[in-house]
Length: 160
Image 1 (cartoon, one colour):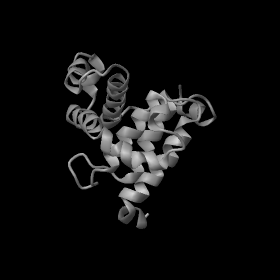
Image 2 (cartoon, rainbow, N blue to C red):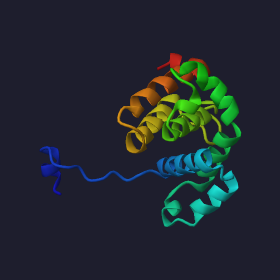
Image 3 (cartoon, rainbow, N blue to C red):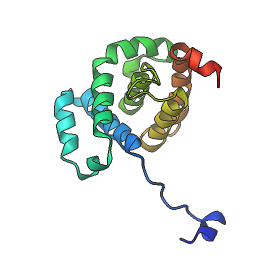
């Protein structure tokens, strides 16, 4: 589609998905699989590598995100639970997975190897919720992770 047509209100060409966003998508799928079936993180990571699309992801980031979210699920759940309007177990597996992934990233300093600014973490989680979650799930994810960012990244947020 020519640019003029896109600017005039036509459909925009699909944006290229970054390696980190692809990694978050794989981690979301893996965490969902873990929640629903109990499959071990190492097995999920092995299955990722068999998929052609995984070649365009940041493998180290995907591994860190998935393993960290699974290993830290208890701690993340304790941080998230007071911010929820229902028990974690009552959330859909997709929204629960997204919140656990967001918590994993927010618990990590932005200066760490896989760290990201709080705004990026929340934006990426909201995009995952828009793409894979329920109709208004992105609004719920946004609100919960925003409150968690205030708790965990208050100093970083002050300058925003």
